Image (cartoon, rainbow, N blue to C red; front, side, top):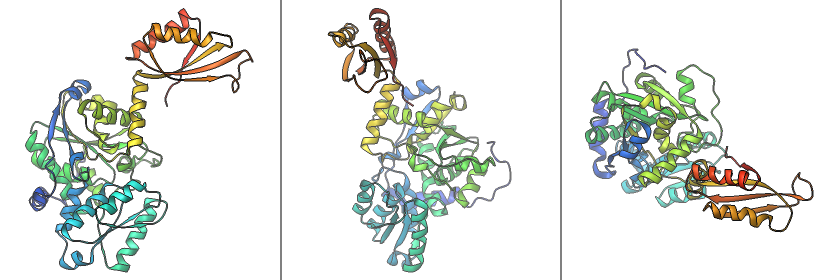
Length: 413
């Protein structure tokens, strides 16, 4: 998508964003923007990371939520606010609502993980469980808004929310003024709208690249006049938005120089790299900017790129799976399927080759019955740990050439 050249009357300005920064002050964390030498070498760009996963609720959403709450009228403060969210917007609104004495009600789909429900309740919000999907929860929240006289706080399609998110850019460019390109995740578009508006105003030549998950290309499809489905289980659940905002789509259309799509493999790789290299936990949506550099290096090579690690709320079991899958893809963890003859010493001889190659055996699955082989044949799956892909290749060669075994590598999707 080429950057739009049409005249655009901004609904959110740099002055609005500066006012939001003054308003929220030190009530949110001024997170660091740090240069990553290793990721720069890996990607061919000069990479700066903005650690928004270090906010109290581990996500940038606090900024917009707090700005919105501070702009409420007296009546709205007394009666309270309502939102539909199963993620970071809920926690940011609940946390700052409790701090300011504003009653907060959050409608969540009944499919929301218990941990997210408990975290939101732990910040003092009243949680209403309704519907199987976010769309159902959203519709119910709008009904309760009217019934109870509450103020609805949209997660992204609100000028005060957008202005709050834009405060990120003020900090990034103050800390790293050489940044000439931003890689920003897009779900509903609130982050890119705010950050992009401030960044372009402060540094007009700076390029803004939006990043969406391939499974949820809603903004990409809309702005490129394409029909593309938005569905599926993506690691980047925080940007899995089917319908971009009405306000944000116009801002993104005006200021985004391009939007790129990233697949699940690159999202997983980015989460793993950030933990391994930067020692920081980032959720899938928060890793989307780095995933874009991995998936589309030609867009970013030679540039000084700012990446917003916009959230760190990832389920620990999911994180463990992501890390293990990354080990498998790099060759450090593998499952080999070996065909043996059912005779004494067969497994011992295989294990001897593993020992000779200094490969650690983790698990052995020895299958005699449920196999298409003849009665005297069997399949053994061996999970093992190697130093790298070259070490794994040497093991496979030793099994095939030295041992005469039929060996196949069980690949990941």
